[in-house]
Picture 1: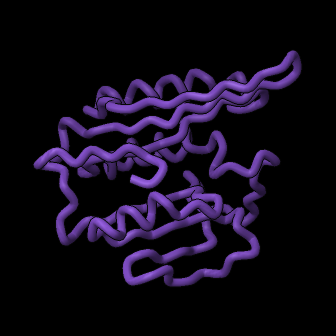
Picture 2: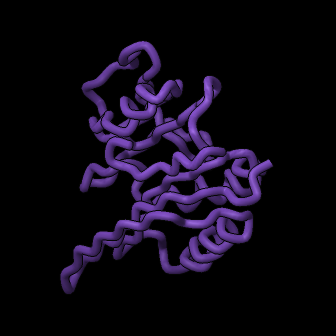
Length: 169
């Protein structure tokens, strides 16, 4: 849908109560609009869209200029490459796993990031643990799109991964 692959097998077709939270959209509402066209209510969030006020975008898409984190922090500064939550998805996903919220989520679409300087070397084992905890909870990937940009002094690796929850409550 839009710029993400979503599974629409019989048991996963969005129903009337379909709810989507979309974080880090960077002015690209294609996914959000496509899910709304399927009947879902979509809440879109991006704190880096500084020139865009909170608004209702059509009947089913609502934009808020706030972000997601594993902690309460009003001092977000987006990375200079201006893409979504850029690396903090590891902490957010770990927090969602710890809280148990993901156990009832049928699909989880995430863009994983690794940079030369992030996560810090001492936090890499936590990121690896988060990745495998997601799998252990029953999430299986059905689409992976990756990108690597590197030079002798910098590196950006990202992977857009679409997961299905095979153990959904």
